[in-house]
Amino acid sequence: MAGRLTPEREAELYEAVLGLLREVGYDGLTMDAVATRTRSSKATLYRQWGSKPVLVARALRHNKPVKLDQIDTGSLRGDFRTAMALGDDCKMEEDAALMRGLMHAIHDDPDLHKAVRELLFEPELNGLDRIMQRAVDRGEVSADLPALKYVTHMLAGAFVGRQFIEDKAPDQAFLTDYVDAVVFPALGV
Image 1 (cartoon, one colour):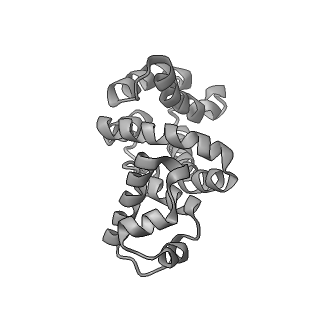
Image 2 (cartoon, helix red, strand yellow; image 1 turned 30 degrees about the horizontal axis):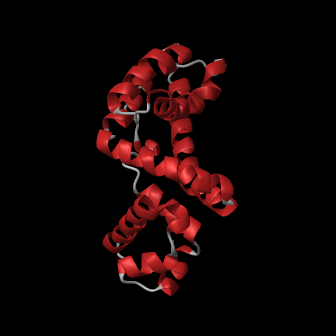
Image 3 (cartoon, helix red, strand yellow; image 1 turned 90 degrees about the vertical axis):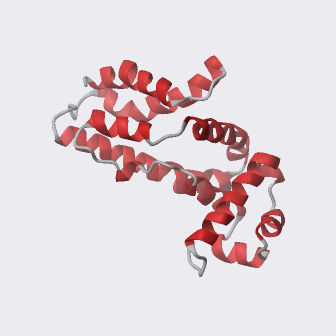
């Protein structure tokens, strides 16, 4: 992002976007509403972010408490434990509700889908890939293990499945149990 915004002002704008998303959903969120809420101009918003989908995706990315690419404890188990410990149960519940609300819009809006994929999901997927590659390099996980290419799917399944099956947002306890019972055994860890 180009521009002259301070990190504090940028964070304030992202919080306003997330607040509006929670209140009115993606379809109800307008650049006019963001401009009004943040006491800025639409021209500034478009100059900084280019579009509503990019602004929303960047706000979601800014909201992520855990950046997987920054975690390296020296073991796969340690990396996963650290990632889970950095999460906050209340925040996970809020984020899960926010993402549930956005799923329809992501499905229907190709620009939003592209922005969320590129700015939110791909950095996390790349971070998870680095964690897994380090585990392979250390000999913790075999490079030819069939389950290796499905780690992302297993983790996504935990988030989505808990909500649909139990009508509960994932929390630290559930994710820890899930990783211990499903992911690590599938990886031979």
